[in-house]
Amino acid sequence: METYYRRKLPRWRVDDVTYFVTWRLASGQHELDIGGRDLVVNAMKRFDGERYQLVAYVVMDDHVHALITPLTTYRLQDILHSWKSFTAHQMQRGHKRFGLVWQHEYFDRIVRDEKELLQKLDYLLRNPWKRWPSLEGYPWVWPIEE
Image (spheres, rainbow, N blue to C red):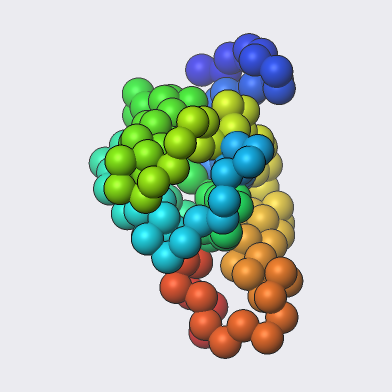
């Protein structure tokens, strides 16, 4: 099934496709620390293989990228809402964050073919080293390049 709708950004939904998604911390929020990044990773992994197939992810200090394929009746917007809502509540309780944690909107793009999938995967996996070139390891990126 194919659907199209708008919030501030237009949304195009198609069954059985992989999406490249990005969401960011709200304006004024301080960067994610180790605990915050771990929380986001654990939230994304929680229903992997059950509600969606998580192809890859990177959790940066102020944003997150993921490649995800929703399964059966699960909608991308519900999956993203779940991740953002759960992590925001946990950060407000245990990480002393106040107010809006994540921006309301997120960016998503349907990955159209294998070439684009490889391009998005490369971008995602290299993101930490692009920002911090001297970085030796980064535990919040998956799959890890070898």
